[in-house]
Image 1 (cartoon, rainbow, N blue to C red):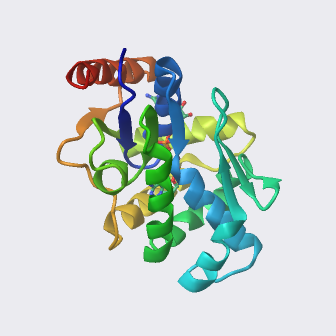
Image 2 (cartoon, rainbow, N blue to C red):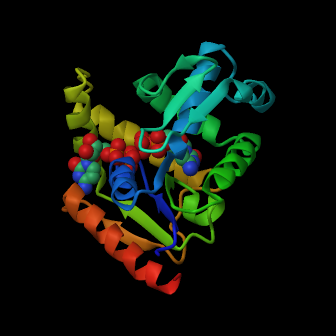
Length: 226
Ligand code: CDP
Ligand code: CDP
């Protein structure tokens, strides 16, 4: 019997975290939890409610509107009240505002607590910015995924074209740089590589190669946890 470990995947925007995390979870029959979706859902709800995104008390007051649903074998679903917003939270205006909400201390406290509860039983792949450092500091497997900013902008560009969105590559690159800067320089739980995380540079790697690397690291760790 193998033990269900906690796998923490962190890194900057568009490094491939969610794509890879989903595939690793599927292969291991683990639950996948996208923590960015929680910050995004709260951003969308705050924007819909026309709340000042810097006003922590006002933002916290709408936290109860957000629900994340996990059903075994199905993708994570996100709701604001009863409205399903799994796709809507990927809109560019949400993307460009989310780092403001994510910098609020009270918001992070509440969401981190919730994420820790979800991960408690193990057998989970969780991705975000502070999973290895703040949410699951005891995670058995910690991965820090990076890629050059040009490659990450190119990936977002290709993804957008597939969705019929035509934002120029240079604009996407700038948006990514701005968000990375905000996420890496905020006072609370900034994006940083945990000391015990394995750095994986995906610039020249395929999705399959990255998944294989993480699975290999996990299989090694499982031997220690038997
Ligand atoms: O997928 P992408 O890299 O664009 O971002 P995401 O994972 O959906 O996260 C959106 C934003 O939420 C990030 O830019 C961070 O500001 C914030 N976030 C965070 O602060 N902590 C996390 N654990 C996850 C996301
Ligand atoms: O979650 P995060 O923002 O880190 O990135 P993502 O949304 O998983 O990946 C951004 C895009 O890069 C997706 O369209 C992936 O298919 C693509 N990707 C890639 O081309 N090569 C990789 N090694 C990883 C991701």
